Length: 80
Image (cartoon, rainbow, N blue to C red; front, side, top):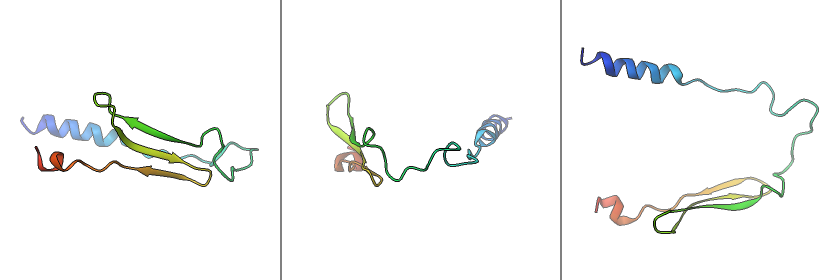
């Protein structure tokens, strides 16, 4: 009986994981984009609500996207 509940939870989680695919990369009749539109190009930052510190940064350029992940503080890695 103890294993029934965890097995049921895992089976529900695994059943709900489905791959999402698109039959075409863009709507029909629209030419593919050669670069990211200027209106979307920016530097997006995540700030910690408590401290105001800048966390991870997402850079969106005309040629692609870069994700800069903030390094983990040494104290946190040690468990302090």
